Image 1: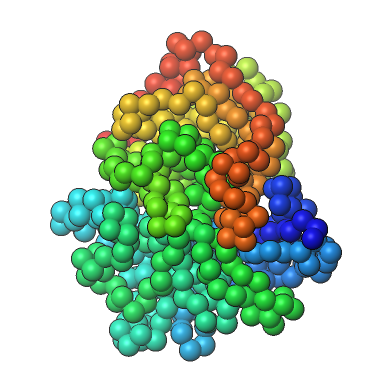
Image 2 (image 1 turned 135 degrees about the vertical axis):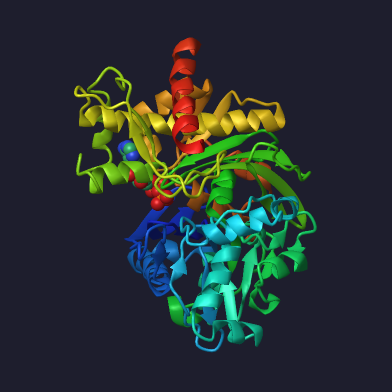
Length: 495
Ligand code: ADP
């Protein structure tokens, strides 16, 4: 039989994509559709869940139509998705009752503040590994139930379903036959206990969420359901699911303890594999399931930063400094240094390790000599300072500072950024040959289910390095830069 292929669905914050992979992890075809974000009020971020579904469906169909020979050999489908983003739909019609509330949305900041003041954060953290922040799904679910007419009564009567995007897509793909999710997505709802590995009654009561809304939680490699033949002309098994950052960890083959990956897309997310024992961060990082296979869980410690590449997008679209994100590199390197300009891109609040949902972005140190090149450079340099914030917190938690970071995401095509990160954090940055690591992770999971891969070692053997950035900056210089960043955050955003 000729070699099988795997179809990965990568439903991200800014686009929906389908990617066809060979069994060797090579990209054979990609179909992508940009997704519109709505900002109906300050701090609110929404998407049309119907678009998420129809775009995903159309991307998959485009692949099957354009590469019929390869698509005929699809052995399984894998799904990875933007995490925490919340959809509630009617079980009878499959129709969402409100827009998808996106992970970046801060509308529930006050609810989280009240719960925190009520002394609930410790309970939440000890069960979920998370912090009480609007980032996670629980308060978004509560907001929909309390603000859409009749929603709470319908939810109590079992007529509504909640899901993160994976769950919603699987419901649609199976025409409502399966209401399931995987442990990594479940863990980001703030309702799932990652120690007992069950939906948690105490948390459901705290956030006033009826259990009847919730999907069944499965291992990352499982039978998540069969797609209905009407969608793609025949039925496929969804064999693997993981949230985007965990999928990237898997795509980067970080299967050993202390291995770390950092993804620079819309936001920046660094995950370190910490093995099979749950440990709570003492430094405002998150503990999160990395993956669970055959019921055996592996945890990761995670640093989540809400804005990374999105800052470059803002320079492009908000300020019109350039027309293509890639131009930022030439602009930044047209000046010898930042000339004292620092840019904290806290457009949607500060994530790890500060967790200030009300903080907003700032540019400091501007003088009459400052140009758009300095501002652009400061936005790119911020990626390194943010990464160091995370690594310092990880070191405080684990006593471990990595020598190597496996990096990926749209921003790693910027060589200036990669070198500056390596310099500021004093670690080597390894960029893999397949940079679609998130989708690749989903494909690996589906491939494990279809028995294309034997085990994790088999997958790890596929990982190949394309580029390496070693630190070259004098430590003193790197520390001076970083200390200025820390001082700015402390003075302007934490007081
Ligand atoms: P996501 O998966 O979160 O949608 P991607 O991994 O596709 O994001 O990365 C896209 C982000 O990377 C955009 O925000 C874009 O501004 C940024 N980006 C892409 N190429 C470059 C570049 N060469 N220099 C700087 N930023 C870039």
